[in-house]
Length: 297
Ligand code: NAD
Image (cartoon, rainbow, N blue to C red):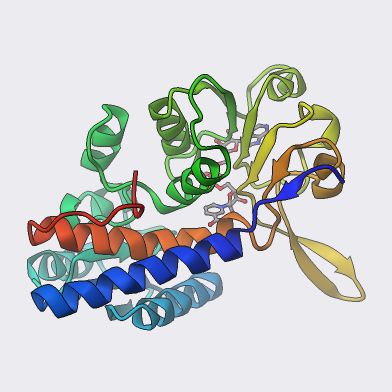
């Protein structure tokens, strides 16, 4: 193996430590406690786990956590009413609606009902526009975590060739915007890209966000490139067990890459840490306080 491992778990622990420090200072100096409200509609088992760990980590860094669990058949008016209440609640600085929502609810409508200043997921159309135009936005957590790790690893990314595989609104598109903001030359690849292998071979930075187990083999990777694997895929591990793998074939890619994030333990832990960081940023902006360094871009 030639690649160094980008340890997302360690980065995330460090970022949560920074967040906790800022939370303590906000309380001591200004009597302000950042609060994060998470709304879960329905009983999707994976979402239940995510919401549980978000609440736990919010409390661990000293912030207030408000979890709202609504029945799967909750109607649009009820959900929009709750969002309005949270928008108006001064103790709530961040609002996150856990996706996916049940099919009868329109996620675009629901997300765009969140006050953009409290939209700590960064999915509101205003934040998407602010990010695209290079203005101060709430930045989506997963791409923010990827960028913080890339910056820590490389320092300046200026002039580097970056290839983002996947064009979703929650990962691929904002990731490309962030890399463009760092003055990378950015290529967005997706399911209709021709000769994906040749496109990926140009990249100094590869971000894979597809959702297909090990689809990027090592021989697509330029020697020395940095590989950020966003994918989370559950595969059969034999004897009735399963395990998580990324979108990149880790063993073959690590043999040629300069640096690589593992799955699990790479991008995943940074996502929740960035959610906490975004909540502190939103709280500081809401109170007109200076924004702490290193929590956002
Ligand atoms: P998505 O399904 O919304 O988007 C997938 C994208 O991949 C699409 O834009 C599609 O064009 C592209 N794609 C599909 N097949 C392709 C192919 N053969 N070649 C090239 N591109 C192809 O997925 P998403 O929400 O962006 O998530 C992507 C992956 O990242 C999933 O595995 C998801 O679980 C994971 N994820 C991880 C985190 C985290 O915190 N680590 C957060 C969000 C998503």
